[in-house]
Length: 274
Image (cartoon, rainbow, N blue to C red; front, side):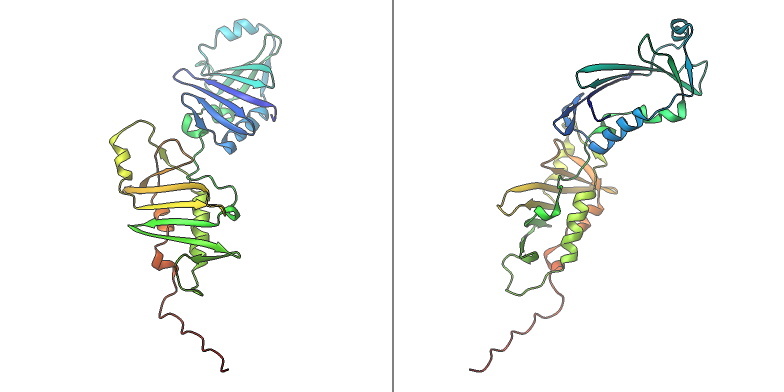
């Protein structure tokens, strides 16, 4: 399975083409998109661990002719070799699926419940990360705009500080940690792949979050726009098109006042008598 570097799915109504670019899967067709590594590797593992319930060795061509049209032709590129598997779901045997490989191999009979994972679409295989952040420790500055107010938090000696705040001002670090964790784990619920007036739902933005490294380079940036029911319109540098995400993501972006301690500021320390 580790040697698979290309997959083509040919369904009656769609074709998907995937290729491995270095260590990353990409969707090449019907559009160029980053692939969901976990979903694609999981598919490959499921494919290679499938087990047949029965084998057909005699009169294979006659049996194959009774299957009708395939519901999937799967073309795997394993190193430099192409391996094709054609899957049939004959009406005469609704509880079974038959897999045909080469003329030398038997026809494999599978249970239909074991091959549900074969039904894939672009959304299932594309990367759905809201932002691309492999390591939270690489973030040293967060530039935030929330409801028209802009602020920056900067990491100094492992602690977050509010840019421009008086020295010694303590922040609620839990809200920063929660923001980073939410950004890292939240996934898009729907993508807006076709140009439409929905893109206007991102302007003016409700919130903007830019994550930067210690050199000031942007790791990724997320913009949140208008709400739509339980979702909110969004875009990020790591995704080629706008998308909808659960509106709880907006709640994870703290307002400036939420980071500051409640109550009066601490009294300045008295200087020791000379």
